[in-house]
Image 1: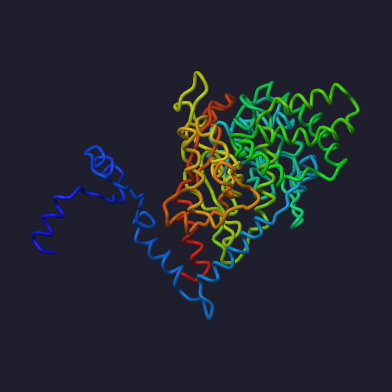
Image 2 (image 1 turned 180 degrees about the vertical axis):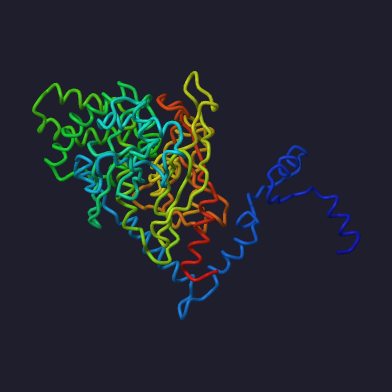
Length: 483
């Protein structure tokens, strides 16, 4: 470039493309400079080890078959299994019938494996409460002593085809929702939602909590089970599709789907109930519980994801879960192995009288709904949730969904978001894309008090810890022959 041309360029108005730190673009804009910001970051956060690993996974060969094609084929198989699942709520049955391996003094909990010595406050509170509920201990203090002495066998829900919200207590006499994936013939189970506030899933354990659980066991569970068995079950895919169009995302907002489920069950409830007082109480409980559908959605998610497990060379996430201490994920190609890291603290809004100083780190198996593309991944369908959980303005909800599209293998053509021009919810979390982009899954969640017995104190948004996905990627690479 000649000197006159260079001087002319300097005299012309500047048009700038800024990549990376947005602060630079903001400074230029304040100076009146026309600027376009590009949200860019180096692959894998600039971590050279993982940049090289991702490159090897894309370029190395495995015998005569290119490794990248092997992984792509496996992931398409996994995604197809996800999308072709046909989940139907078919029954409510005692846990002893649903899970024959479940025995006295055995407690299934949310999240990856954990022992009493590492459990958080609300998890300990729930364990003590469920021990009294089951009759294993006369009071909470005795139950805590029994737990300290090793009287209970703690196991993750996921190991037994089950899931549970927050603390996730599953024990022998509880009634469990049974969702059958009719495409593959498997079933998954979840306890019935107790409602909001001081409840066992948030660590509540007083008489009010235990009496409610007894009513659910003795009245609600059998009544629902009889109604579901009288028909051909309640298909869930279409119901969720309608819920998305009505403003639900199926984790923090379940108002529409709870109403639709009640509408679907009401005729059979009326036809099978033998006592009008019981019928009235059951209808009132379901109608008054805006989160009633959450546990159904969780069992649905587990039933959809279990057939996706164990596909050789698939990098798709089959489970995400947390126990208040650890966050864990499982990946199709690496089987039942948990990859864990310390769980994050949610950012959100608190009920009056509580602050973040009262909060426990995130917990629960409910992240199975994000694993199938709902919850934080479907926030664009539920803009009201963004404000409720402190995720920004309602107009920001769409960006959460679009960002999650960067780390997934596809969209769900049956679960679409009208406000986003019928965009399918992002589906099939790929550990390679999570590590490459640095975008961790967004999760909508409730917030429990850190002390036993208090219950829910708020709601918020949390990110899955990136360390889980990096561990998983290393193990996955080894499983396909990449060192």
